Amino acid sequence: MQTLNIKLQLPDGLAQEAGRMGLLEPANLQTLLREAVRTQRIARLTEARKRIAAAGVTPLTMDEINAEIAAERTEQRSKSAR
Image 1 (cartoon, one colour):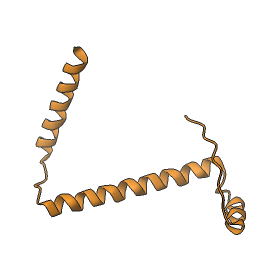
Image 2 (image 1 turned 90 degrees about the horizontal axis):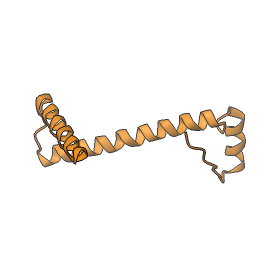
Image 3 (image 1 turned 120 degrees about the vertical axis):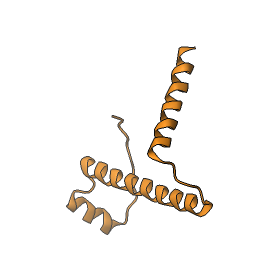
Image 4 (image 1 turned 180 degrees about the vertical axis):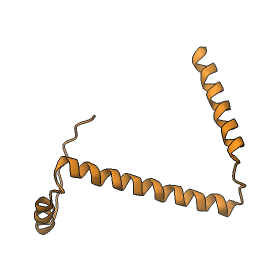
């Protein structure tokens, strides 16, 4: 785990309310950050799916995906064996 010191400038009212609600406590900040990261990842995935659909790319089957994964793993193993 990494320790970060974060300094925030918040409007007084927001800082007071967030403090009263416990949102500035480390565990709650961690939860908020996890939710924000998850939201960002979902948004990026959604945009990528839209671009793929607009480009007319045919989705891979599960067999094709598994074959690609196996090929990548084989390549990585051969690189690390060198």
